[in-house]
Length: 559
Image 1 (tube, rainbow, N blue to C red):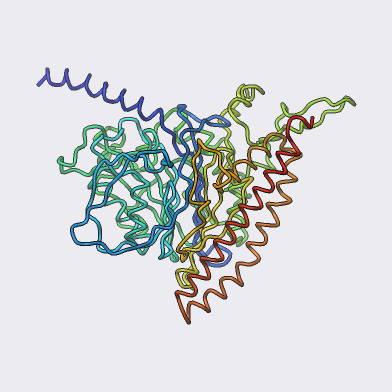
Image 2: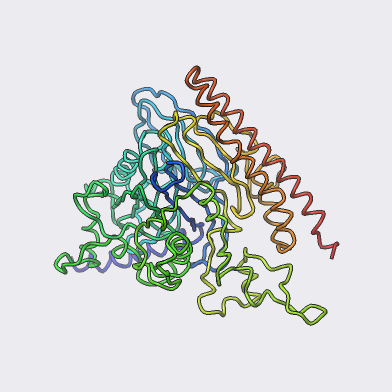
């Protein structure tokens, strides 16, 4: 027995090193999800959101953060269909990062259901025909939980299957948990756990899932994942910024769901002692105690701080307070209710209006020809790691880890609103953006649409193309950032009127669509498809024109 242990330990270490090298070369999602309950939203919508931010291979994110292959920003409608008995569906690894040149790695297959529902497919699939919407944010897990290669279910695959098979958020949570347990959860992002914010027109859930270690096999008879979910109160707002937020799980409370092993893995590893008398806290149990991905890292907490201090200012939230200071969710003060616009504004923030506004560091101020201290026209809130190093921002206490919600290296994102008083094709509206939320425009995409423009279904990060809508928004973002203090005015002149137009048209569009639906559902779907396509094309054209203007106006021959 002793000799077997001696052999096993080096083998496990070798496997861990090999897997670490493999994972460290891939990107990880540094995302922010904001969830709004139906009683605290302005119009009774249930809201979730997602910014698909691209992290890099480094152990921890700095001001900029690296970028990798690029998350799949192609937005596609995958129509529902019937399937013959006995059909098997393939399961792929790293499906969230695919592009036109990527060969998907099939790692297994599972039985298909008799009928699948229509859903929208991107890196992290986000909406189906029954108004089930899902956001995603990578969360930390202890390195000891590094997944077995026998585990095949990534978060993007779980989201896909949930949207294809579920009509409610509760069903989606249960299915993702069951599939993770049966087939094993495998991280897409380095060695991390995952969180999905799952909503339908009636409720919102925060779902967290973790792997269970290198030695798990399907034949073991034990769950291949541990997971838990917590319902967001209808009158509160929850923020998940790349860290576990569920905290203490109340067994027997219908507002919680969890796997049978959610506590046992921590007990077996010595991370929780049931004799301690302390309640089991899933965040404390499975989050690393130290390092960039620990619970108290400033780059995750600062996003909580920014939103919570805006919602509940009387609490006087401390920017440097530990995660335990922040409750799972909060009720906005003064009876305040949030709109889709409010959540969009949170996505656009770079801590503007605070002492941590990223374009207002002392290093941005220069002396002009009159001897006056003025802000450089190059001062920008979207700071790359190279620029941070040049300005020596990393030498400031805590500054190296400050990262805003709005990111220059975001791939895409959305704010979704789902509503129970409208028919499903009309009630589900997802406000989609490409690239940086701060420089992009959010476009209404209704869950009843059956087809989207080719340019939004086309994206190759290694091939700049005027045929890809993503490149229009990325080009604007690039050139705005070259001379931000001046170019931001050109951006706002296009971005803000276009955004307001989309919001102003929404009531009339939805009223017309709902009336059409009563008489002819197919005609309503066609109407919404045409409207969604027209908005997407209008935004793309406006941004290509803006890109041309910025290139002409701010090329380096002008200065």
